[in-house]
Length: 375
Ligand SMILES: NC(=O)c1ccc[n+]([C@@H]2O[C@H](COP(=O)([O-])OP(=O)(O)OC[C@H]3O[C@@H](n4cnc5c(N)ncnc54)[C@H](O)[C@@H]3O)[C@@H](O)[C@H]2O)c1
Ligand SMILES: O=C(O)C(=O)C[C@@H](O)[C@H](O)[C@H](O)COP(=O)(O)O
Ligand SMILES: [Zn+2]
Image (cartoon, rainbow, N blue to C red):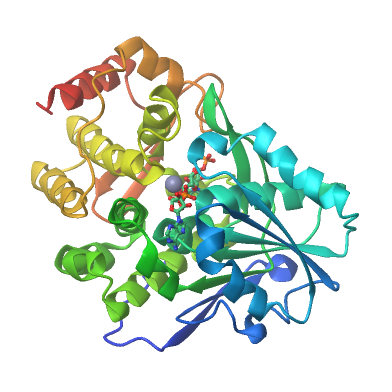
């Protein structure tokens, strides 16, 4: 895949990128003040009715502005409890209950207003309700704006494993109003930065280099830096998704850090570690294992650890998980094929690879050293 080129010195106030998926293709619009702009929704809402799905934290902050943008439509809403621990089938059912109670038909468009948890659940509800209705992503966390709202992976967790029940269902549009990030807690902003760093590591070394100088600006919500990081992350994701929508091959690279990260999330009980925190540590663990294999220089591992730490993210895994538990959790990863673990590792900064060539003993040793802080 060709490089994305240098990072632009300036960004437009409103950026539009396209996810090139033919008839399932859609725009990602990034800018401030989009929530209440009817032009952001009119071309993408199918029918006269919308069902907004949000949660009890986001709705008091942004529901009114979104309703103003959707004033041309008949608006229904369902407000869910907040938290990763509610990303489950029981909470999903509340969306179906609301759709059925209001007698919503196939001409209802679901609108996900919130972070990745709301986006994944509303998207999954849209994939299933009456065998599929349209939906629009209105992401309000950094993590959702740079990653989860794009690409059509939807679903819920199971106690045995992360995102184990779900479907691919692409949104009709992604409307990312960056002004919503002003109310995001600092810990959640840091969590979003983990997926941003991931994009630099997978296939975009110039972006990684750029990030090394920009983390303070990003953590201070400096608008130009934020808009650049969001757009660059989405560009990286969009082109991988366009090349491999259903993860037959290279889309698995988007899982860098996630085999470790998902094990941490499931093993500690969903919500103790935020997804982005687990991914941040997972990125460091993937780098450390890559170094053990002789694929990555120690200096690169040190740069990756330093960047992740500078984002305000943990770099060391929890000590509460035994070696057996790690392997048990990693064995249910969706990348496992014929009982064989496949991991995304690094051959360099900006060069991620999918490999099945990892000796379990080496993996165990790497995890144990990471837990001990000696890796
Ligand atoms: N589908 C995908 O491709 C994909 C990609 C990455 C992550 N994910 C999933 O996304 C989820 C994580 O998403 P997340 O990090 O957005 O977490 P989240 O959805 O739990 O949101 C984080 C917290 O911020 C609150 N919040 C949201 N917007 C806010 C705002 N503007 N101001 C104040 N508070 C706000 C939420 O209510 C929540 O408490 C995980 O379940 C993960 O598995 C999916
Ligand atoms: O979009 C993808 O593909 C990703 O892998 C993005 C990840 O950041 C995201 O957390 C995703 O939900 C993980 O997918 P899963 O298939 O491992 O559950
Ligand atoms: Zn992720």
